[in-house]
Image (cartoon, rainbow, N blue to C red; front, side, top):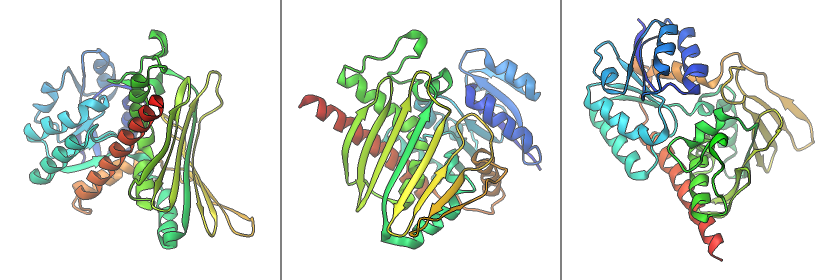
Length: 346
């Protein structure tokens, strides 16, 4: 039987990703209510799905037809809305990344969900991508032979990406003027927002291979909008790079892992599109490349299938892992922002 979903938020991720996914999983889910924060977009999206619509969260959380609450609002609202959903008696929550923006919020949310026995899934879609499971298995098997990890994002600058990382943060869209990145405090805030808004896609996967953050070695903003962050996780060096350039190239989203035995590259599809799973290729010590195939379903579909399995009781909610993922991302963003400020004072 399909579970009834209520969606909080009407941004580009809802229209381009979650609604098409849920329409394709009609045997598992049915969208019955969509709420915006006063933008007026909920009505058009709800009419497309034959759902109820409202402004504000109260009507949706009070709707007895809603079984699963999908929180797709700006990041600073996530923790509060999870707690509000629990208070309204909802016991199944899909939360877009990030789970929270502070470690205290993450602790409170996980404690509340655990106490309520609520099903909780965080939409870190790369973690659920069909290509990542075999790569993780391979890397875990190598143990201490992993040497370096890099994630490179090259994204064409457009308002979809800007809104993804900027809602509620210091960044202003192109139409309203760029942030003053010469101001260290503004630059640090932008960096924090970018790491928790975009790097968050890959940080849970990185944590599985390189747990712990020993030292942020460098952290800087790359104008007009990007970052370069490097840190040590034990003996593993991790580099995160983002570039959004005027007249930039087609999107590239690549994770590369160097080990003492081989090099693995995982190319993820760009955001806001359905193009199947990531693709992988592995270069062995003799220089030969082995290519993996692209699976038809992407991580966005896989995460909702995972939620269905959790609701059916086929899987357990991994509260400790969810908390560890959230804290890892926040600790990195905090440390990188602090490193940037420290460098500015020199």
